[in-house]
Image (cartoon, rainbow, N blue to C red; front, side):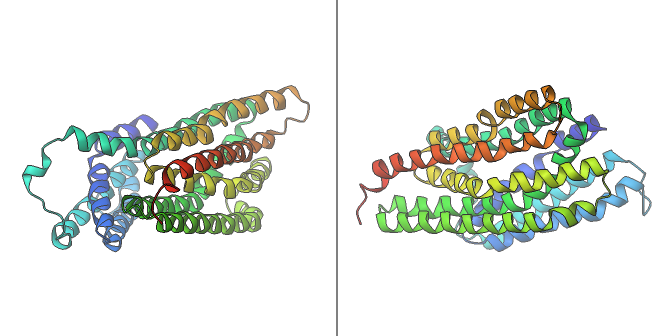
Amino acid sequence: MAASYLRICCTLSFGIIFFSIYEKMLQATGKSIFSTIAQISGAVTNIILDPIMIYGLLGFPEMGVRGAAYATVVGQMVSLVVAMIFHIIFNKEISNQAVYLKPSAKIISGIYSIGLPAIIAQALMSFMTYGLNIILGKVDTNAVTAYGLYYKIQQFILFAAFGLRDAITPIVSYNYGMKSRQRVKKGMKYGISYTLMIMFAGFVILELIAAPFTSAFGLSDETEKLCISAIRIISVSFMFAGLNIAFQGIYQALQSGVESLILSLCRQLIFVIPVAYGLALFVISSASQNASLIFITFPIAEIVTAVLGILFMKKIYKKKVRVLAA
């Protein structure tokens, strides 16, 4: 089933790829509302088609997990078409002449110098999840289920931080291009502050709803306890994760992609997999078999990365911001 789902989603992924291009062009001209509408239209299409194509409703054949995959790619194509229409109609600031499709090594290298850290960060998230599932599976299969459920919950909080990061980057970048130290400082200050506020709110909410929310899924007692532990332990790292995510946006804006990449590697690989593996060995060798101990990996990784991020920030500020005109 996994192979069928992946085969369909990967080979028909052009919808999400080209949608992301139109999405960013709409955002670049200040028309984020249209990119949001396009994204929602695809998501709603996906939600409507899921039961129809999975269970074979309204004359469709019953396709099971393949139906879920087809519903996903159809939703992505809907988002693409809607975003493309909005771009053509409303993005008058951008010329769509064929001459601009000619590749430029200078422009492509500039894009990748800023975008590569984000690309790797997205890939690292998948590698981290895969590696953690292997480690948790060696300790307790219930821990895999608990972490999988928590991972979906935390996305609501982290995506808010990612959205602010994507807002911080252009704002700080524009003002850095203007060589306005005061406005760069304000962009950094408010970007970090707002991100920390959202992450603190997410921490409080998850700590309060951990038990009642988890009980709604009808999990076994052991899995439910592990899921509650995962929520309460990992959410402690939110404030530090928010700081690291904001730093990544600022680094990219100040043309410090290497530092952003290092932070991604640290918080999603270097300080995660080895620590989790070490804790797993400790849990296996101990009599308690307390798999929830492995979840401490996340606060440790985010805290250590935040310290490194602060050191990078001081260096970058001194080198690139302090020298700007007031």
